[in-house]
Length: 398
Ligand code: CTP
Image (cartoon, rainbow, N blue to C red; front, side, top):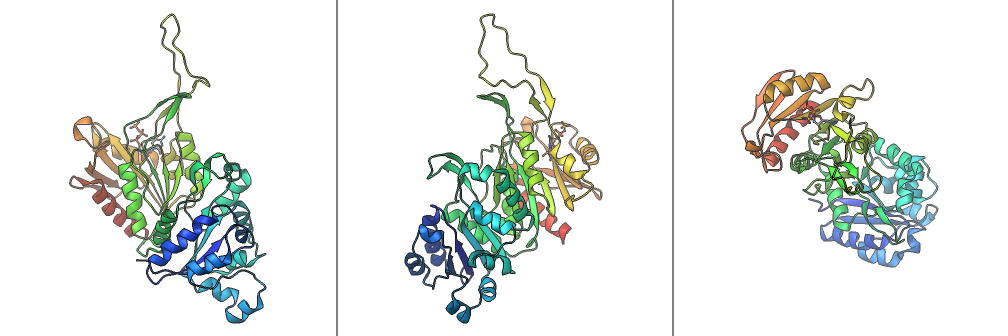
């Protein structure tokens, strides 16, 4: 699928640059033409010789290299590729991109291109979480830039958290997804998925039985139709699909914030099983049994309704909003009431009573409710529901 594609690979300055050598190898194995651009700071970590040898291509290094300009101008270089990939994308590179700067070859190419751009960020966790980086991330996302990672994990600097560059094969999957051509090419879809965890104290939480299977299948199906997918997931038991931009959250409030951060979008699908309430008196320290045997008293507060808040936006509302309704009785009547109350366009209703085996299972039996009426689909695998629903979403956005 990638064979014959041309990738302009911009290598930023970070310890993760060493993984880019493996990325080049993986891409070449798949028949991709890789044209590397090594930034001055990237060159502090890996050498032009190793990059050039693995890529089987000349390595572009300096904006003012007149030989380069004579051979291929920077405008042409930025457009000869099918996709631009920046790996590792540092905090500084993201800031310069968000600010529209063109003060070296890499940023000039990124500003001059008419092609899609994929970023694989890598930086210290505090730099990733800094409000300035968060602002730049929102600006770049809003401009339609694709992201893969960063992943959670131990970093070269010894700290732990999000900031590690995605692995080479994850970047390959994201490249495949960015280049996928289908009816949703150029569209951005947000999906929420999985359960939320609402803390009781630092070690205990309230959760539900959602496995995240339906949301993950839908994200994969939309990706396969060419969509850029922002996948916002609670602690699910199935892994997120490859090739989508994953944001992991725990609580309903974090999920709400993440959804707002990923707008604008053409469509939003709310497949998550969000906890309706959170414990308002969650303890800072682990709750201990006391000698009297008295159980602790938990107070509850209602969580924000993420679906309703986005469906009722007066400005910037995604064109299509799809909710799910998990019901144990009066499925259709309850779901239709939910659709009108929340203000979404479609509701995918399903029966989650224990006898149905749907929650946490591999199959689903759904009814799609819209202004046009109700349509019941036969029981089928969650992948089949996802493929059919993705097709409907593509048709609605066409
Ligand atoms: N939802 C949401 N935010 C919430 C609660 C629900 O975004 N705080 C979304 C779910 O992702 C789903 C839809 O709303 O798409 C319906 O969820 P469901 O749990 O079935 O409905 P509730 O709002 O909990 O309504 P009820 O308690 O009446 O079943």
